[in-house]
Image (tube, rainbow, N blue to C red; front, side, top):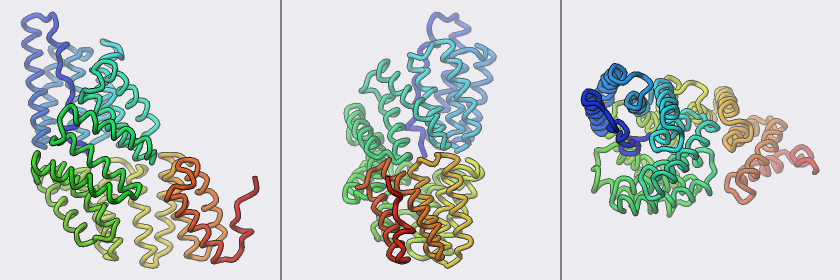
Amino acid sequence: MKHCCLYLLLSLPLFLLAQKPDSLTNTRAVDSLIQGIEQLCKELRYEEALQTGAQALTLAETAFGKQSLPYAACLIHQGRNYFYKGDYADAEPLYRESMEIREKLLGRKNAEFAAALYALGGLYKEMGRFAESEPMLLEARDIRAEVLGKEHRMYAYSLNAIALLYQTLERYDEAESVLLEVRSVWEKVAGKNSPEYAKVLTVLGYLYLETSVYPKAERVFLEAQSILENTVGKSHPNYALLLLELGNLYGETGRFAEAELLLLEARDIIVRELGTDHPDYAVNSFKLANLYLDMGVYSRAEALFLEARTYWEHTLGKDHVNCAAVNNNLSMLYMDMGDYAKAEQLYLEARDIVEKSLGKESPRYAMALNNLAVLYRATGDYARAAALYREALPIVEHHNGKENRRYTSYLSNYGALQLQVGQYALCRFPAG
């Protein structure tokens, strides 16, 4: 869910060094095409950007060859075009080839290599390949800090990507620390009344929403909304993303009517500006489905969940964590409707996806175990439920500690099971 304003890359000063007239002419032609790509992206005209990117690649290959900096620059811009469209599989080889060319020609300690590393690390985060993403993003951050300084927008972009990764991994304390640094950088670089500052407020608000610090979340969301209204306007996709998160907050706090209005307004903007075949539209469908689930409007919720899952299966594959999230929430819906067989099937699928993508030590894996346990408790399979709680609790304790809200929720569920069956020996933790 990133947009062009968040991924502006460096210009191409190295192209202009010690070149012959014909070479300089070709360099300027490539650079002009790249500027056209960036403008098309700002206008959300991604298909035209892809066409222009293909022209730039052809020109760069003909004029400079594939092992050249101009060609590497065209690769990364074309990769970004695919990234913005949500075509991650097409973006990956372009990012990787650009990174390899830049490393070969320039080494690793330079802004151009850092840009390619950052792009590939961000792509892997979106694809759920977290173990590959983190070291790339951290190295890109360190290179930018050394080469560009810590009050540069590229350094801020690196910090933001790392914070988003930590939020996805539920490493919330680390995420907040990084986001507060990002906010400070943008305040110095762009000022408080800038889209960049609003963007980091949106991400920070989502962090507070995830950790149930609702007053803080609303405060920063509303501040971001005001900034975006006065900068990019109410028809911009970034404004729609802010409405998604604000609507999500109101849904979480029971303000359903306000939440629905905001999510539907966001949906209209996304359809108008991006179309229905876009990651932001799938996210909107998922969040709107969650709201209707909470409201008990099951038919609407089911249709929207299935719409989001179909998109993510097509673009990311069936083993992506987004598909696991949909399966998990669909299971909740089917449980509410009394269809326990469907619920169990989807909970098991969600658990297997999370195990494959994130591993058994992930907090999301613990969540999948807890949800299965809730199902088995509801169907009277108390022994299996107890075993799942015993497996889930140590994982959450390890990552978040015993004071964490998720740990206390799981422990409460486990205690309720103990009281329900009256068999403490069945449910107690083993000694040691």
